Image 1 (cartoon, rainbow, N blue to C red):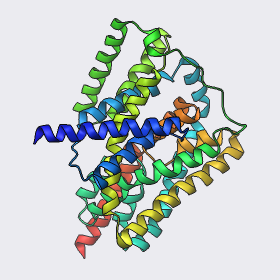
Image 2 (image 1 turned 30 degrees about the horizontal axis):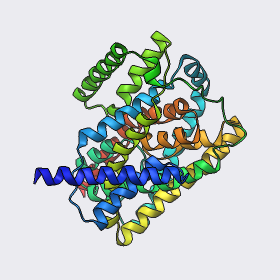
Image 3 (image 1 turned 120 degrees about the horizontal axis):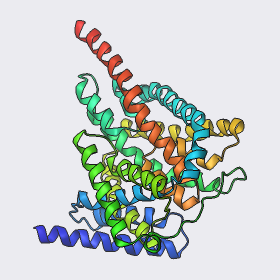
Length: 358
């Protein structure tokens, strides 16, 4: 049985690599993002293979993406980001406000209560939304879970398409400096030092149940590395492509499963809220762009209601400022965790008390 599962995983990995390379040589956008997704759907839906993709394997891919993100936070970039905090805060607050407005209509279409609608629509901090859904007696955790997790389908389809339309806009920020590949810059002892530092920070974050530690741990380590050593690098192309493949296979498996779960009225509501949230986010950042003159593509990727890992893959492919875009998402994670989530939790508890009194 174990041998069969490993064989199925190997078939999936081989298929993902082949499909990714076909897309790459066909000059299709984001080949190492879409390749694994297509491969997962083929293997699960058509070949009907039982897949148990190793969680630790996909985590390695996510950590490598975190290294790539962190490596872009050079001293110069950090100094530039200091001037954009107002924009980052405005975009984050407006996105949350848009989410709450859309939650009202989602509630009507899906015929769910207010608690379920709000927890389903808020972008980011998936684990926090699910925890609050579990704690609240009135929230439907199945709807919250399905709505939040299904967002990845719309993010990986719509966000890259919109981003590519505006990836060459005239107002793009400073061009990203082309650092040399890791294998040409670092020696073996330095690589080991970085790995050990990431492992230590990851362990500490895991102990306190900090979210998105797979990305934040390497980002923090690489920011510190850049500030202390001023030795900058980027991941070699083959390492970055490998990281995308082994991580996006997991996303592809999630999508393959979700395709069978999206049915009926709830499916219509989920499609509505995800598509509207992404399009509304684009319209919102377009107006912000008129006042700030920042790149539409970078503002959109920064404000897009998707996971940082998927958005960063798009940012890398479109040549956008990865550090700037990551700053939007990192700030959103902290903003939701320490401000939005406690407020929503408090309001839901008040609502629950009123419900119990009735």
